[in-house]
Length: 137
Length: 255
Image (cartoon, rainbow over all chains, first blue to last red):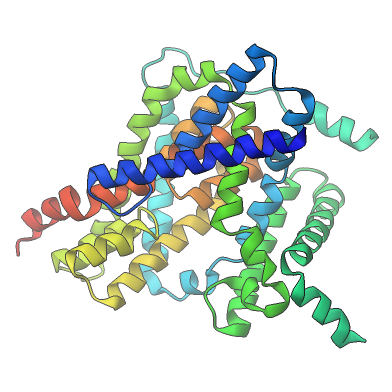
């Protein structure tokens, strides 16, 4: 059933946030440290185990893929509820500081991604093929 | 009649948000296909449009939650709030390749620390260049350059005033929003086209909303990898900001 997938997702998020908060407490800060990341690892692990046991059928997976596919619209809604005025009105320190930090961080991404490996990670296949199918459908 | 219609929208906020965002995405996807010939991703246009609407909403209402401060669009705050956002982010892990995670895991950890060191250092240097010499002010502004949560948490812990806290939030907002806008633009130059680069990207940028939106506009398949490291960033930032970072700044500037 679809709800099984949704319930598994919800359980993973709740356990992850709980562990993240506990991790924060151990570190002595009142914040959730990596709760969502922990929840993601939990979900990957649970789905793997359940599929191996053969008790996670297509319907249950549909409950996961539905929420996964709502991700971009949710991010658009998030963008539409940001304090953009606050960012713009922070004055030159905020604008210059924010932009310089982002530029340096961008530049360091390929440098760090190359560390520890002689060969650079393989790019994903271009997404063109799927978009063409979408257009035909 | 119009009043009745608005009543229905107001009392079904989240549903109205689904309909509105669906319509916005339709318009943006059509614009991407016909106006840019598919060169710019429809979701990148939709996210930029969302930010523009946030600006309009903020100017119109004087509030801090963008378009969702307008009663008619209040459901956007629920749909785009942290509860549903985290729920959908975790769901994207359903497609994650475990081998990729294991391969790039160490780089993700390195990126987390570099990703915090860069804004702390650069943010503090810029604060100093703009005439802030008090260690508390420099630390708070530098922490804000990590994320708009690390800034206030750090500032509060070391006793910064509310004007500094507001400034640290503003610098974090500029960071988050520019990551949303510029990620799809620079993705090719920084070779952000594979899961392990996305893991590093999440750790370097750290702003969950910026990383989430930036990767969604670049290639949605990269989202789970970036989001996974980004969610550790703010927590570690809140840990390092008021402790090591503050001590380093204080030992350099004195006080």
